[in-house]
Image (cartoon, rainbow, N blue to C red; front, side, top):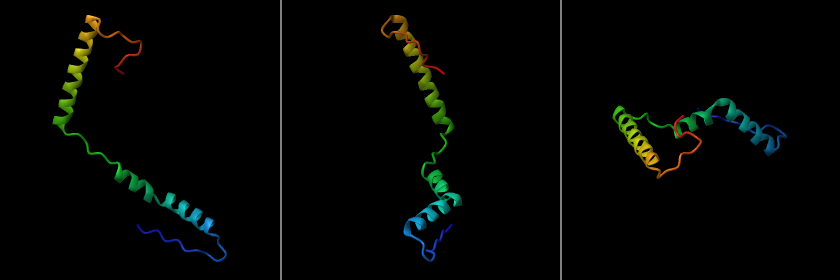
Amino acid sequence: MVLEIKKQEKESSQNLVRRFSKRMKLSGILLRARKKRFHEREKSHQMKKKSALRREELRKEYEKLQKLGKIEETRRSYRR
């Protein structure tokens, strides 16, 4: 999508920039560009499974260390 703004008679450059910015926001060009730039691919089934297993192992290890008294229990829970 091409956005074209032409300077009107007796229009200051500040007004031109302001008008251009407003048209850019309303057109949605910036929004689409940001979505495309920061788009992340969805994790594959295998990667989800792998990370879930790793989290489970870390949780068990943490609980084990807590029982041994090597890690003090905090008020705030690490699970949500």
